[in-house]
View (cartoon, rainbow, N blue to C red):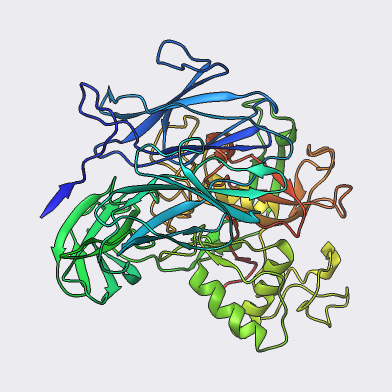
Length: 561
């Protein structure tokens, strides 16, 4: 039987509850909001102001149709902002969440820990969480009264890893939040986790999720002493037994959840149950039901002229619009998936290659068909050479202009002359090639699909990378050319940024010969930067050592097999 877990948050006349948990993390000129799922919600509206007491009638700004997490940018450092959130579905809105606040700063504290769990045992509770970026230690606050906060909870400070909190009273509910600390300060509180100390089974381990057509099969390792299991699921990584849809009284170590909607990412946690109670939540597993799994392959981009850049929004670095003449080339249908990255990476290590980064399976390291992220420009060029050699193709990148020494190690700022452009090996697309491919044969439009943003075209706010290919392809049959993760291209960046170096009608331009900023260019608009960056002409400039959980690439080649 599937039921919706009750939520203690307020309920509006529409029946939509307010998010039970909400966290506001301060950054530099930004605030990141994360909130828990609400059953029946399609999207969320955010209201904020610079004074407490934000309501639907009293606010500085309203942001509509968002999903968790959301990053509000271009805020003033040193100013405190106050936020409330409501769920929305079919023109109906839910109750407002409790208010949270954050103060952007040039040197912000670390973000709040995520995936906090509380697993009960007799006389104690085991509290655990995922590490927070740049945190040195953690603080646990707990109470028998909710909501627990920094001012109301009993504090345990200087914690390095998961902690057994004891002695506690069996049969009494306890509520826990965790904060992260470093020399810059203490984070906001995490989502609240709760547990009732008793002889409940341990949290299930080894949880995985595998997608099918309209279904997901969830598996786990049996927990000692458990008599049954519960699965909770939602379309947000903030899923928990407080917020997820529940499948209860399961036997064995696997269950297929159905029916589910294809091309929608689902997140699952599992708990173990016996006469003593229910365990805490397992770490989540993610899977996206698909009619058929993505099959990588190269797509031909025809030769010819196209207009690069645009004048639509008067963006300086997208101008001047100029004509580019490109030879035929080929580019991967999908962003490079982690499975392919890992296969080639491991081969490369055994064949004389060295990398600065090992790559990451999507944003959280969990899930199938996810793009590789956390790879630098240098890593990518070496990997492309390794992929070429592994497939008996001629490598493209060399440490010398004579093309005798293949680039396999170190950080080398290659020039155009060190690239064997005519080889059949894999390479990064040039910036011009990438933009032509992104436009999909449609000229002069903001996005691969046209001038209007609309919805359902790209992952620009899902809060993490999602499996490749779940959004519609462009006119060339390429997926995720807008959204999901940013993609490295070949070209050097420039402090001037505009195309003032470009020659109208240029044949196969490869960008400036050097960079006055030491940057390379990324394209495509990642999931965390918002819809502005989905434009075909949008450009960003990053050091070639840069990595991020929203940053990957795709392969190109001058010659197919």
